[in-house]
Image 1 (spheres, rainbow, N blue to C red):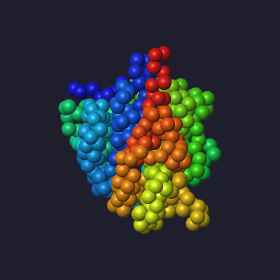
Image 2 (image 1 turned 90 degrees about the vertical axis):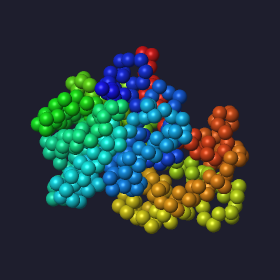
Image 3 (image 1 turned 120 degrees about the vertical axis):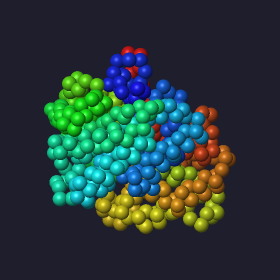
Image 4 (image 1 turned 60 degrees about the horizontal axis):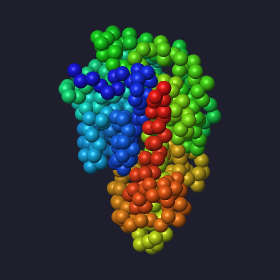
Length: 430
């Protein structure tokens, strides 16, 4: 039987090599290419995860099924030269969330179909998230009901797995799951998961798997989602504080074979990311932080194009995105409070980056293509790079980066991922 590359992640900290792994939660092709380029020189596999709302049997907001997503990732890998055997595909928040307006049985049937499609397409890291209530239920369910539904989804995934050379899937469980994509409100403090809650969640899930005849499958549960005290909202970030999470970190000793999975680690400092991995939060989820870097770089290039080629385009990229966003208020309206002017700023600059939902729109795609074609392969003057892409200007000046638009765009995203890669390898050679 082929062994999953993450099967022994709980022991990585005691062996030479990486001590954890970044989890790239994005479907954007430019982000995926940049991440492949960033990870390629390292010893890490590349873990790429799709979420239930983003990719499912109905297409999600990207319009992609799990098989479509897999095909996109492998096509980018072929173009980038990233080895297929170093790719790990994961499914995040797999459960009834996209269909929670339906009655529980109907929603769970949809969730079973979804996770089976993920497993069949070769996704081998599956986060079982049944913590949300469906029609007629409380907003959040208790551990026992959540665990029973998680076991039901694990059974569906096991029945659909394709077999060798694809390894059997590994699973992530956890009921203290942060809001996908960041919090909607301003944040001051967070309640860290208690050690007792972490142990109880594992015990209840173990019993639910046994009740469903999946005792041996539970051995492939490698991680538990907990709240270590990290989150981001529209305007601010709560950074990880290792002393505050000391008791939770120590509780991992009672959970052999498991690591903690930290969601919403976007925008954490390099020091905080390193501390998270050191403290046992070995899987670092990052998504909006990468598409924020994408948007930031594209807007910088958009302004550079206006300087170099004024009045050539009838409408610039940012103005195009504003039109697309206004045409799709469901993607942002309930997430961005305030006056119309405050909402306008949030549409473009919020840390939750709801703008990522509209990149698949044909108008947005065309505007990006037009922008990159206009700038072409020509070297952009260094003063303009300093003005509009300042975070990578020093590398251009030092001769480490070419000055063309595509290189600068990819490098901006690679720069955002770099602290995650460094954090997972910081403890090598102890």
